[in-house]
Length: 248
Image (tube, rainbow, N blue to C red; front, side, top):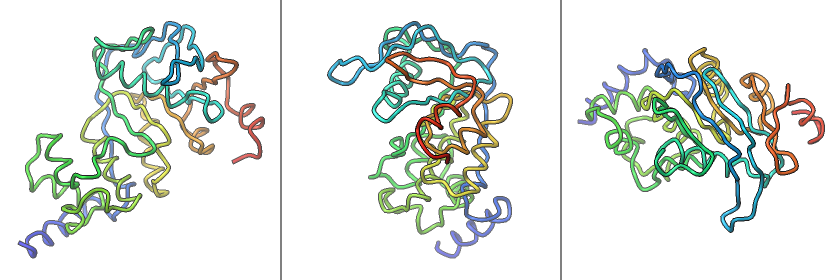
């Protein structure tokens, strides 16, 4: 079994080059909707109901790559959480948030919360997706997770290995809208370049939060700023970056 597993892993290497998140190609599922998400003055609040800001009337359209800017504690992650809830369960969506029915969400946060630390990578893939064990092992090997890592608990993986697993889950989900909260925290350079390339696909749409200024500049085509308890649109992020301090 060990020899067979090693042969399987070796067979996966040529197609995927080296063990890097950069080898994982994500996939965008098409949607004909022009407006993906509508915000109608949604109130973004802390868990104890203190108002952080209101969104006003905003929309996210097909091809929009919106970067959410604001100081720490201003409510960026709270808005991401509300959007996720509204997309995953439209019937229980927070007031003021409406997502089109054809939306397929690809979600990843800075803690890679979509991954269960108690699971193994094999279990995470087989449980979520209609693939057999052999196909799962091939996918994981191609994503840079060696055979011996595939049966370990996810909590034992390095940050980079968790990021590669998270990107593989995104790929297999085939989303048409990405919701990303600090997605580059654990990615290597190739992984970040691969994510940028995927998000720049004309079919891709996303809302993201990131402190990586180069990533923001490379990916974003719309910029929302949380300012004085309102959500305002900027032409570019440079004024916010300048006010926040030295360039990154």
